[in-house]
Amino acid sequence: MPTPLQKAAAWAVHLYTAAGAVCGFGALLAATEHNYRLAFLWLVVATAIDASDGVLARAARVKERTPGFDGARLDDIVDYLTYVVAPLFVLYSAGSLPAGWEAGVAAVVLLSSAYGFASTDAKADDHFFTGFPSYWNIVAVYLYAAGLPRPVNGTILLVLSALVFVRIGYVYPSRTPVLRGLTTVLGLVWAVMVVAIIWMMPEVPRLLLLVSLHFPVYYMALSLVLHRRRGI
Image (cartoon, rainbow, N blue to C red; front, side, top):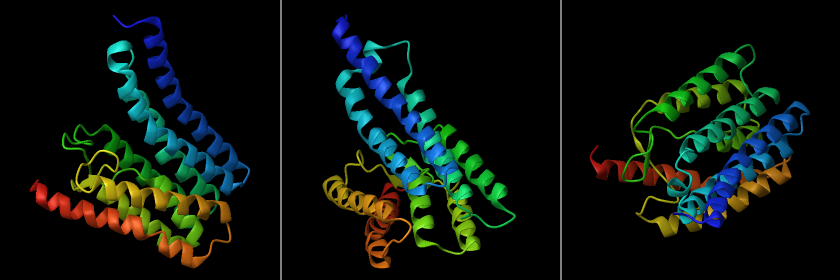
């Protein structure tokens, strides 16, 4: 039987996960005030929580010590808010979606991501995401920082939404074993660059933006190569 301290630690991890929802709400509030730098910074904090709560949950053995509470469900609820709803609202508020089609494009992203989250094969047993993961917070940073034409932004969002339904395996950065060390190092360097991009908004140097694409390109290439090896 877990001790009271062990139970408290498990509940503290759940609270830590739930704090991501507060960050998502902060991003929404910042967007309504047209403070997009702050909105993206809130999403960075939410992403940091999501990247670390799994390790803490396993260390605290939350499944054993809080059997009546589903931490995975909580994580999905928070992730849908911070990875899908909030970044789409930021793009909508910033006027980055195609004029006259803002709600339609946003609806496609929201609905496709809902399918992605609810799919039983969304996270494969061999630690891959199935279908394009809902990295809309990252996509939103690049679309806003690049200042691309609205129709281009809309096309990118629709193409990525379609890829949710294409059952390709995408690397789970912290858990896919192949090249995990390299992925982690490149990911950390990239994360620092993304924070710098957000901090410099709205005047982001083009060179920084282009160099930061090293990790998304690496991530997509590695995912496609490993998916082909999986033979699924």
